[in-house]
Image (cartoon, rainbow over all chains, first blue to last red; front, side):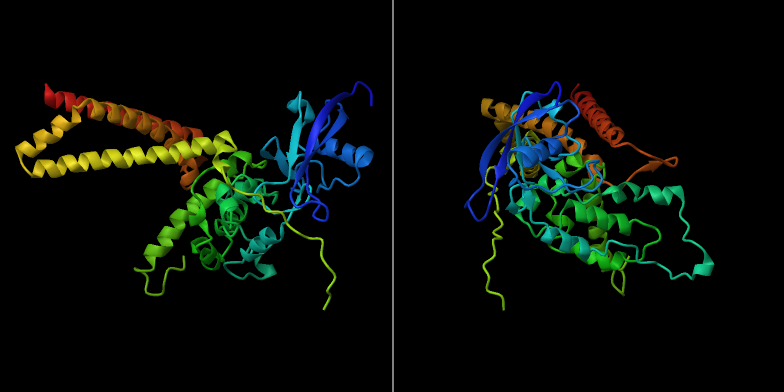
Length: 250
Length: 136
């Protein structure tokens, strides 16, 4: 590696068969200016210690696998560069607020069940035959949900949300933002079903508008906005049922 | 049934002192704590209204109580807290409201925040002008 500098990377290790609680371990990694934190970890795994465990896939900030706490902040390790963290040491820890499975890998089971629970797909408002052509949408209708559709499920927003840390049952920013993405889509008719999740104890009211989720989101989804818009929708739902004989379904 | 022991043992990290971990959380806590100042000042004004309904002596007593050094110090603390709270509140405001479109274009969050600051300043100046106008 020509002209390589060296930087200390401290990894929070947790090997459940060896340790009762996580411990820090230091590695010295040669790096060049184009190397990401993920590449630093890959160097450790390939050259120094094959037992260091972490998730990654695309290396280009689209798969959402390599999120971790870098110097205490939730970030994608593939789009965070070692050169920006000089002189080091760089502290790398598993995403906050999730149980650590091993080293930098967290348990995602709960997150995935929540994600499935919101029916993250369009439930057509009106059934159309193929012969009737496509569902049309204006640019304005698109703009109402487009940013919320950029979520890559990297869970950085969960690691930024203290309310999720304090109550893991909270549906949380990412999933609620994706829920809003479908509810706000003019082609979708699944709103009534999803509002049950919005209105639930674990729904939007668990949010206290800390706003850090939107700050750390690598895709500018602004989950805090999605969640808080739905506090208004949830309140409308609550009060409108007194006016509507059939109950508020819109 | 498979009785083989599993190695899985998820480690849950404690949340104690979470708000000190990131400056962003400290700022959030300041926003929340300064909301108490808004409540305290509302109570002070409410007491004034109650004392007014009890007659001139009662109301003058309330006015006198406001002029004590302790009260002035409290009001200074409340003033600073309210300014901090108003600023932080408008900072988060764009995240708490539906997307705003004017003339087919999305209004930026920073524009909403600045509009909030502006309305606060204008309202404050108007109220001050009104009070001074009544006094003189």
